[in-house]
Image (tube, rainbow, N blue to C red; front, top):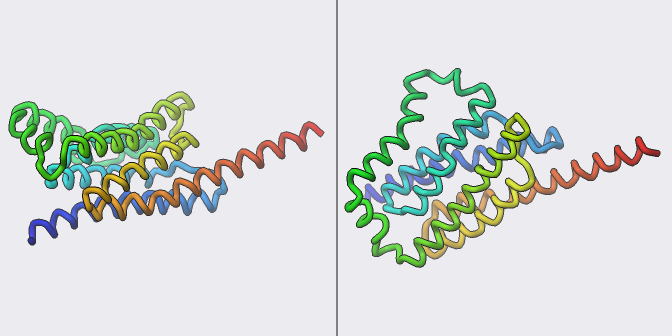
Length: 219
């Protein structure tokens, strides 16, 4: 019972970081009337990913672990683009860089045990594992899209496509969480849906304002 509570605490703390990143980004964007990509968004993302990956590992939930692994180094890339990475104490940078590598090495060295724990989990039937993994991958692909877009633009940005993918992926994860009766996923993702929609509204208003300015100049 105590272990279960501790695991849930880790999961809720991770979602707390994720919710905080969305809230801060939302507030700053509302003030600027422009969708921003603040440095704190990526710091909180990294902290949340680290803890949620640990939560997924402790819950033997491959879908959660997979989702965090995909986006992990993209968070680091954005921190580097924001000129934050080099200011982090170097031993911590080493830990952050090497943790996924060590984890993958552990999995490869214990492939049989890993498959038994994660891929043949009686609590998560294969169809649900595939559904949950697809939702996590879709949700995480928003950061792949963000990375490609930002790399092309030469600066860290959060474009409309990022929020559209976020919304679709989040709804998929909420469904998965409801089926698994996972309060961490349900609560964490439900909060984000409102922010994703609002960021799309801000981008739409911003585009409309730019179009009106263009029309005025042409007149």
